[in-house]
Amino acid sequence: MRTPWGESAVSDAHVHFFSRRFFESLATQAGQTSHAIASALGWELPAADPVELGSRWVRELDAHGLECAALIASLPGDESSVTAAAAKRPHRFFAYAMVDPLAENPPSLSGLHALCFFPAMHRYFMHDPRVEVLLEKAAAQGSLVFVHCGVLTVGVRKKLGLPSLFDMRYSNPIDLHATALRHPNVNFVVPHFGAGYFREALMLADLCPNVYLDTSSSNHWMQYEGLDLKTVFRRALDTAGPSRLLFGTDSSFFPRGWNAGVFEQQTQALADLGVSSADARLVLGGNLRRLTDAVRPGIAPARSHDEP
Image 1 (cartoon, rainbow, N blue to C red):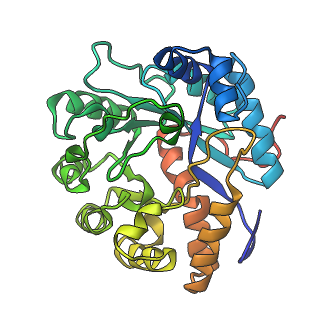
Image 2: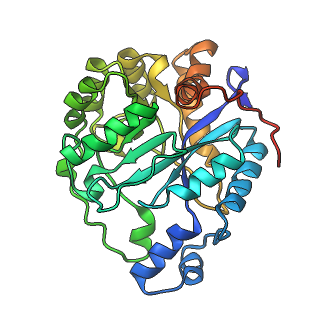
C-alpha cells in the first residue's frame, strides 16, 4: 500500500463487523425491521451469512491495498460471525469479539484472537472476579484482551433514538493497572489512545509493558485536552515506543467501507514527526501481525492477493 514511506504492508487493528445479527438486535430494540434500520441509517444491510460479509470486507481491503484486518463482533453473543469470517480467510482476518462478563452464559473463546471488554457499556470494573475468569481463559490460549476506556459513544444508537446508558466510572485505564500486572503474559490493547484518558493511558503503558495503544478513529476526544494528532502520536511514541502502537481506523459500515481518511491523517502525522520507515511499518501492521501470530501460530503471513 502507498504510504509516505513508499510501498508498505498495512493492516487495520480496529474494524467493526456489523453482522446481520447486529442489525437484528438494533431492530428489536427500536421496534422496527432490520431493513427499516438499514434504510434509516443509509447503510447496506449485510447478508445473513457472515462469510458473505467477510467477502465484502475482503474486496474492500483489496481495493485499498490492505493486507489484513481485525474484525470486531460488536454485540455480545455474536462471536460466531467473526470466527466464521476469519476461518474462511485466515490470512486476511483476525477474529475479535465483544464479551459481557456479567452475562449468564459465558462466551465461547474458540477461534477468537481477542476478547473485547467494554466496561462502561456493561457496567463492571476490570478487577471484577467475573472478568478474571475470562482473563484466565484468554491467558490459556494466548488471546489478546481489548479494553475500551474513556469516552464511549455509539453513533448508530443516537441516530436511531436509542438510549446509551453507559457509565464512565468504569472507563479509567488505571483500573486496568493491577490486572495487567497480574497477567504479564496477556497482551492488553487500549483503543483510541484511551479516548479522553490519554494521560492515564500513557501512565498505564509506561508501567505495564504488556499494554498496547490502538490509534483508531478520528480521536475527537483530543478537544478535551487541546491536543492535536501529531502531539498525541509524539507523546505515545515517547512513552510506549513504536513497538506498542497499533494502527486502526474504527471502520464499520457500508457503503462507506474502509475509512481511508483516518489512514491519511495518521500517516501524515507520523511522517511530520519524522518517524522512520522501519518504525512506521511496525505501527501500520507489523505489531498487529506479531501479536496475532502468537495467538495462532503456524499461520502463514497475510497476503494482499488472497482468494476473492
